[in-house]
Amino acid sequence: MARRKKVYEGKAKILYEGPEPGTLIQYFKDEGVPGPSSEESATFEGKGVLNNRLSEFFMAGLNAIGVPTHFIRRINMREQLVREAEIIPLQVVVRNFAAGDLSNRLGIPEGTPLPRPIVEYYYKDPRLNLPLVSEEHIIAFGWASQQDLDDIIALALRVNDFLSGVMLGVGTRLADFRLEIGRIWDGDFMRLIVADELSADSCRLWDLRRPEGAPGAEPGPMADVYSELARRLGVLPSNVTHAPKPTLIN
Image (cartoon, rainbow, N blue to C red; front, side):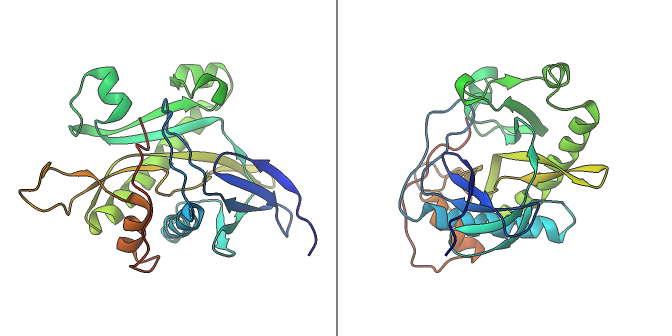
């Protein structure tokens, strides 16, 4: 078998040259990725398999409802064929409930419903620990244009509607999640798409199926977010178990 050319390697994924121009092969590793302003992550055997299947489920679902993503198809248990895109250097976080860093910054009790979904931006530079930035910073430094930001917000809110509905249907509340946006070109025409991944690493999820009267009977973190979410969505057999949930977004 010909040796593949590695294009990029991060903490959780490796990108290889794809079989056709404009495509890449995305390989999911078992290592963890911390959320914005967080040192916490999860690493365990088989995590890449779970996140590959979960990301396939969510990206294919978005494609089916007309939300453009980089996902083309799953190749095997750890790899996907995706479109090559220029990644905008921002981590986009959509928040539905107060939690983590938002609660700490603004003094809002964790679990408080927000008046509307809030979209935040974090500058993707690991040396700076993903600092929170404003639209003014983004435009001034040329990371994205005002039109890009308008399109990013529209994409992010559509993804939020989709994910929130899917999660609620399986007894899970989507408190917040992160995504990345990429640029692709069709000739001279540029458009923005959802890129990277949407998986258990990307979301803060609260379990709505906790028994009434149990300690912390209010919705709380899923005890095993990766395998439990995969079971509820029907993407893996019911006898798979893995490690406990990390704090995914802070």
